[in-house]
Length: 470
Image 1: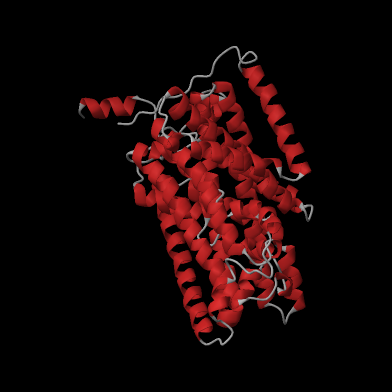
Image 2: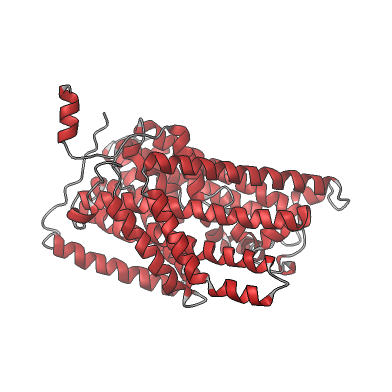
């Protein structure tokens, strides 16, 4: 055994650098979901009077500003922890701690929401197949709690296998979703080619229809458009598990945002051509895209698209679960939260196993709590946005401070994107429902008290970890 091997065996375990740029991009695509606009298509079409493509493209421009800030901060600080790390090192450790605390809503609420959605979608599929047998349909509804447990255990078990195994799972999910999208596009193009209602004017209506266009409607739908991209920030939580993080995290963050934007715009553009009628004609706004798929491919395509949305939500839930464990690990390693539990890595898999198990438990309990009220799912989505947008604002300010203020780089590319990114995120954050703001601010207040207690009311500074980039 040589000296290097002995040193490695004696030292504490560290996160394993096992991901290249392709794996990082696939992780980001699965986390956001290539099918991201499908679940919100019906509601977005209603709010924006059919201009969903325009909403998606506006959201793309808006989120690219924040994606650039994330990528540039990952270049400056290639460490786990994402927004917590960037804000803590660049602005102040206490602000970084509060940013990480608020973002727990984002990272923890996403697995909860995905557990609920996957369980309900699974039950809906079973009910659809058992339409001729009411007793079986009743039994399917009664199994909802069992599905909560099954999906929470699935997310936890897959992430406990290690980062390389998680990457392989992401590859399978991404490949399956791409296949579904290809089948949908082929069926939709065949349907449109046989249709006599599609003319030159109809081809432009998804972008701009003078009969229904309204700037107010687009403004009201802005938050829905941003939901298409929520999750790209999770890429930066894997900075210590990526080869050449200074380059690859920046490229992956921007590329994932761009790819999702273009792909989402294509999906909703084709859907609008296939179903040009008002959103009020959909049987269900929540499952509107599946009804579009049924029009072009019959019941078979309806089932395929619905099943793909379940798989996509599984991928998103597992990705957010993975990101949540890395955020908690980054905070625990700095002893912002108890290091003995949150800052430990499993010696064999070199992953924060304690955090993965904890987030899995929270996802299970949270699913039961939120599902108690029919409005719980919507509230969970609002709380997710509270944490995400708070983190986005902090990262934009950090990028502005690091490059333009302290770095004295007066080029516009270091001034305009972070300022615009901050202003857009603040507008969306302030526009959240009152109950979500109240709960989020109450959670933030609890974080202030807890952080003050652990740091002698912020007189004892936090130690921000420096990653080994070897």
